[in-house]
Structures are given as structure tokens and as C-alpha cells.
Length: 91
Image: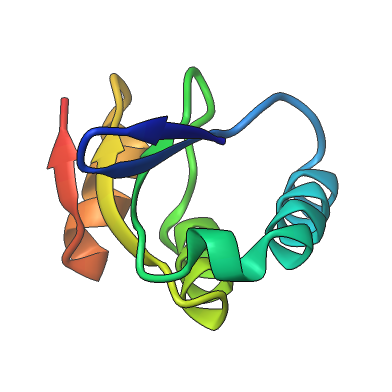
């Protein structure tokens, strides 16, 4: 997690999806008030998330008072998933 001019960037690392989401949840729980009201750019790297997986992240961010605002990706699957959720996406 790092700061940007327009909010936060969260880079999703490698590993099993349940472990990745659990690690992110733990990190957000540690600093919940610090991140509140932030717009988040979710950087997926080579990971190709399905819509339901992206929904998990969006719900987790919402729970902590944050909004998924941007998904920059080079893969078609997360591009389509982000569009389906109404999230801004760049290819």
C-alpha cells in the first residue's frame, strides 16, 4: 500500500487468493482510520481477477471506508471485471 496524489495504490502480490485477501484485510484493520475515505487504485500486475474476486476487494475496501476507483491492468479478464463493477479501468 502506498500513497498517490489522488489516493492510495494497493499492489496485489502473488499467492493464493484467500491468503492475499486475508493479508490485505489484516493490513487495513491495523490502520483503518488512516486509510478512511481514500480512493484506491488496485494494481494487479499479471494476476487476472474474475468479477467475483474483484468484488471481494471492493467489499473489503468499502468495509474500511475506502472506494475502489481505478484498476490499471494489461489483461482482458480484469478489464472486463472492473467494467462490470462500474470501476474506472485502464488497459
